[in-house]
Image (cartoon, rainbow, N blue to C red):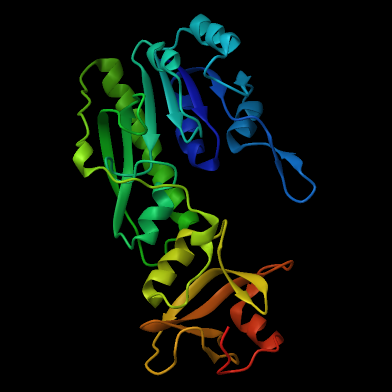
Length: 306
């Protein structure tokens, strides 16, 4: 099939690579380069790097909605399908209608659950044991299109956002190829979503990233995993931010939340109904280190409240 691909982050790469190997990929559309870091150097997306490496036509429009030039390009290509995987913007109606078989979106949840921007993070934060990927025919409303295929993926106790994203990306690439095969052979149909069962995965706010030690220890562990390695759940110690990238649950029967229980071999902080042993941390302005090393090098004391 003659395709255009739209995507931006690393999550999109397995699908993009599969399409490139199995279909007639005419162009790749990705987000413009964005300033990153303290010096605001322009950051190139993973999808752009793939396009340049494989000498595929690359388009980076600043806007889409009223972009006449982009519309002319897509009309000239006349794609059978536009495949979208984590592009990062809502597509206008003219683009949804232009391909022969519409726009096919890969979404990282079992729709209608977790529509929206942060389905992977929210699934981990909610303590879910399963999530998955869905392919759908895109519609104007957010992630509300009819669903072609779905594939479930287990969330293990050790999965964080990075590891689960990789598993979902690999599963998604297989699902997209299966969906395109069905569309090409005209033996697949899309099923409308049950809007009454829809849940929304909004972008994680800065306020949510801060750990509330009065919260249940298990819920805190979910938050840490959901935001690791980036952007990272954090706490304040001596008015300085420390990101917690990995932690393990520990028992706590007597210490009130926020109490430092251990510093020597483990850096353990009490929470409600448990405690967290900080395994990997990133103090403000410093490199990642073990929680034990941070605890030994700090001026904190056992029994102190953070």
